[in-house]
Length: 214
DNA sequence: ATATCGATTATCT
DNA sequence: GATAATCGATATG
Image (tube, rainbow, N blue to C red):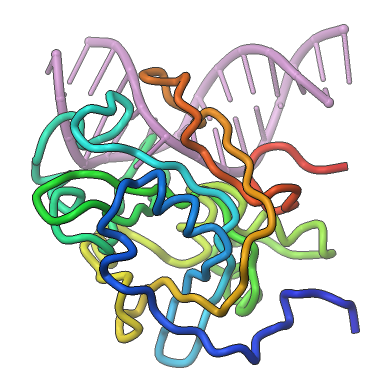
């Protein structure tokens, strides 16, 4: 059997405190690296480690959706911390964020890439792709649209969901894993405030989005 | 290997 | 009417 930290599934996973999310999104983003996203369905549980995120500030960040103010679309970002903000983009893809800052103040963290831990068969089915080798695993959840598809995340289903509660079908857990190194880069795919280094990733992790490591 | 482009719709100007 | 926190397919060096 291949040696992999992906198989360390014996550790207990517990949810994060609400106050964890009630802070500056840049701080929350860095500390979310290494945590686990969990989809609990009736018969299946999908888990994957968070390896790449981006911070979006409140109304003072031109790249953030919340810069447009509190609208029907962005209201979750202005609501209580720790809740899922799901938006639809390019007519094709859903993207998952978690709300930050205390209620009344906007801010969020975009999930950009995950390292699958369990339920890979289900994820492949949801993505409608086939996995032929370990190399192919990154096609499941390396990218914000991909991970949302793998986890069956849609706006109808998940927008507003409480990610700080283990009773939710979608939540964020901590299994005690501690990140060794964090890298910060510019955020991907934006035109406004593109110079800010608010994309964070686990150093050297092969499951980050974009380029394949050789 | 990188570059370009089409898909398809919610949201904003 | 234009744009967008993307992806995958196709073209080109």
